Image (cartoon, rainbow, N blue to C red):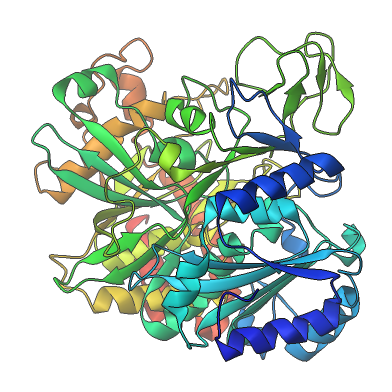
Length: 592
Ligand code: OXD
Ligand code: MN
C-alpha cells in the first residue's frame, strides 16, 4: 500500500510502472519484519549469503557480477540542457536523447520482478539541511544497502508532505550489460536513472548520484554546498571540539582519517576524535555567520582491503554487526569474511570475490576485489560523534584538501586566504586508485575531490565557492589547508607514518586556526616550522630531518606544476573565475 498521498510521488510511480512493468510493487517501510523477509528472500535466491550469526550478527555477503565492481565514470552523464552546463570535466548527453535511450533500455525490464519503492532522506529527517529522494529498484541488495546508508520509511514521506522537491531515482538492473550501462543525472528535472549495474556507487542513488551530483547543482541554485568531504571533530583535553571537513579523492583514506585513533601520547592527554561522516558533507551558513556541516548519509560504504585493527579499528568494529559485505573473500570454515590487509592469516577453504574456490595460502590471485566494500550502519562506529544526528550540523573550523602525491605537495600547508584556499582545492591532483574503473597510479587533477561528482560546470562550482567565501566574515570563515600523507622518499617508502599520526598534523592545523602557532611564508602558502609538528613517540619512524624534507617547496617542481595547472585551467576558457586566474598569476610570480 502506498505510504503517501503526495500526488507528484504517486503520479511518477504510476508512470514508471507503465515503463518498467513490474509484477508487483512493494513500499519499503524500514520495519524489522520487512527487512528480515527481504534478507531471507535474497538468501533463498543466492543473491546474498547469511554469515556466521554468532560472530557477525545480521551480516550478509554479496558478490556483484565480475564486470560490475566499481563506479563507471566513462558511462556517467550529466544530462543538462547544454554541454556547457555540464562543463568540460563531465560527460554530457542531451536530456531528450538520454531519456529516449534510457527508457528504451528500461522498458519492460521489471517484468517478472518486484518494484521496490524506497522513500529516503539524505540528512536527519526534518533537518533544514535534509532532502528527500525516492528510489525505485528491482534489487533487494540495493534496498538493504539503502536501509543502511540512508534514513528510510514513512517518516520521510510525512516530512515531504505535498512538496514536489524530491529526487526521482530509477534503478534497473536489466542484464548487467556493460555495453548498456548508464548512470545519468538530470539536474534540471531532479532525476537520476541508472541501468545495467548492481554495484554500490552506481546504484545506491542517494550517495554519489544524489548527495553529490544532484545536490551540488541544488546547492549552487540555493546557496549551499554539497562536498565530497569527511567531517570529524577533534576534542582537546579541555573538552573543546573543533570540526574539520576534508576532501580527498576516492580511496585516499577518508574513512581512516574520519575515524582515527589518537596516538598514545595524545590519547593520554585527553585528545579524542569523533566521526561525523566519512564521505559527504552538506554545508550551509548558520545564524551565527559560521559554516555548518551535516553528513547526509546514515552509514559507511567503506573500502574493505587494507582495513584492519591497526589501520582503522573503528571501521572494523563498525562491520561486526548489520553489515553487508560486497566482493570480499568468503571463509567457508567459519562462514565469515576476509580481505587482503585484514590479517596475515588468509583462509584456505574459501571462495574469492568472483565466486571461485580460493586458498589464501596457495593462490597468487587476490581473494577480495581491490574495491570490495562493507556497508555498515554509522551507529556501529565506536567513535561516532554525539552530533551525528544534530539537525543543525556542526560548525566548521577548517577545510582540508589532500591527495596522493609521491612528490611535490608538502605534508601540510595553509592557504593565505579564502580565495587562495579555493585555488588550492581547485588544483588538487592525486594518483588514481581502484575506486573507479580505469588505470591505477596515474596523476590526475581532481578539484576538491569532486571531478567525478560535480553535477554542473566545474568553473561555476569554483565561482560558487568564491561567492560563499565572499558572504562570510573572514574572522568566521574556515581556514583552508592542503595535506599529503603519501610523500615517498627516493627508495619509494612513505615518509610519513599516516593513520592515527595524522592527528599530529590536525593538531597543527587547529593551532593555526586558534592563532597559537607561527608559520613560514612560502610561494605556495604557509608551512609549519618542523619543530611545531609534534613527533614525540614516533622518532623511530620520522626524525626532524626527514620531517623537514617533506615540508619543503621545490621551486622547479612547482613551476612544472604551475604549467600543468595553467593547461588545466585553459580547458574552462572564459568561464574560469577571475579570482582563480589571479591566484595562478600570484603563484607564478612567487616562484620566479
Ligand atoms: C566512494 C568513492 O565510494 O569515492 O566513496 O568512490
Ligand atoms: Mn567517496
